[in-house]
Length: 164
Image (cartoon, rainbow, N blue to C red; front, side, top):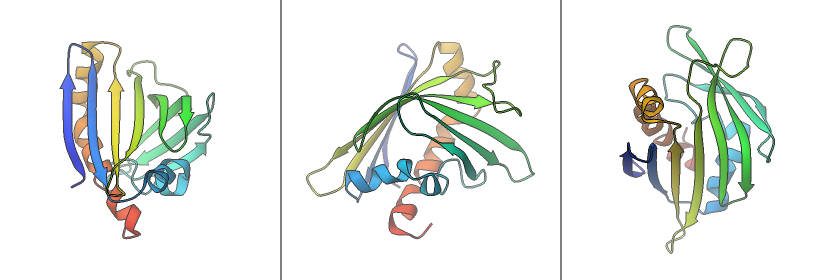
């Protein structure tokens, strides 16, 4: 499994996931820049995603719908704040309702993804999710965010090698 570390910090309201991939940063970047690649790993295996809109530029929005094993649906969005290809992007990550609009009863998370080249030609990916409060963080963790991120990021190797 590519995930090397998961850190939860209730004082700073952050969940940090670090993973290593045997591909250069520009290749790993394409996983997020190309909506067809993004939907091959975004979401746990039992909740595959379909990307609806994909505008990965500052001021843009990425929207997606995940479908569960019993026809459940969960929609989400990223409001794109900052992008520095192929090194970093920052988004506000949230859930959406049936109408595609942000769900007011669920927390929004600030997600910062960075890609750093390693000396062996691989890439270290760091994803820092920052929550507005301890309550918001605990709510998202109780909903399975940590396990979901582990499962989603665990699919990236397969996409990089073309196996997924």
